[in-house]
Length: 438
Image (cartoon, rainbow, N blue to C red):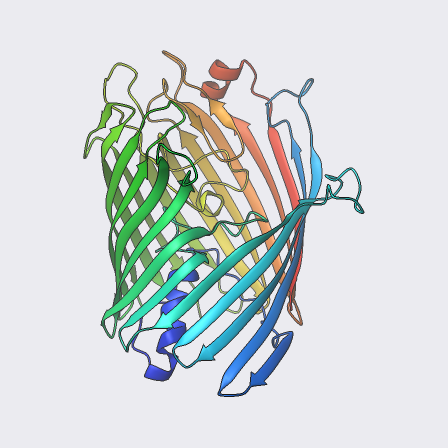
């Protein structure tokens, strides 16, 4: 993976600082799609410049037996669409305004495509960026934020609507090869009400990269004044990420975090609430197909039903789809996960990846599940074996900004799913996605 931070010229510094916050690479998920020229570009008086760009994306998905019942299971098929138009206005050398409008919808969701039921339009990003001085960049407004390898904070680009946060991000160059990022964002607010409740995610994230070695240190605060249980959550996450790439092609990675605070009047004990990731792999850069092999392991704490504390790690705002299976049955909570993958690039514009994932719960009495489905709500004396998933992915850049991607997955439930749901039939997932950058 390319270094996130490196020495750069002053002319390129503003763009690099912006990319550091908003486009960090997810390990093993980068695909180099040709970027065409902007759709429109206007040179305006007083060195002002307006650039207009766009994106169209479609994804057809088939989900079979997601309730693990062959005879009674629902097998939905749907097509999602994302359309975006962005206006990038360079007000002057140190000030930039950015507006991105997005329409996301599922084919057939409206009762009619010509009446007011077609309501998928929203503002995806709208921010002002100010280059205060040579070392400090400020962004205020609605924006995508991606930190590190996106296990905790991600824009979640897999979703058609993706994820943006409303707030302020400050990026400060602490050296030629390191940056300190501070952010304060609002997740929910009832400013028009009288009880002043809401939810915020704030943090500090320091990142450095030099000679193939990357180091991150971070602290993130989740403050929620009205949880689903009508309580409060004050949770602080402290963590680090390390990655080393060697000239031989070997790479190793590590990330660990712990949390402390309180949730609904239950303590979140530091060290007992944790998540750890480790991976090792090898890339054959000199081979024509550039084969890449990697094995990784993840663990994250869950709740012990016999404890008065809340020891379940909170995965915050992750890119779960990139790490814990294409079928989205798991997140970095109450998890033991081992995986292996092999990837090849048959051409400069294509890649093929085969992955295997094994899932267990750390605490069988606690919930296990991901963004799409809950495999178990927790079973006393139940099994911790959640199952195995096999994923196949192929992606190809067709040129002129057009790309296509196809995936197929199978999830074989374990005895823990059978204990919780009473059935363990295989679940299947197929998708085809294509898009164009304008």
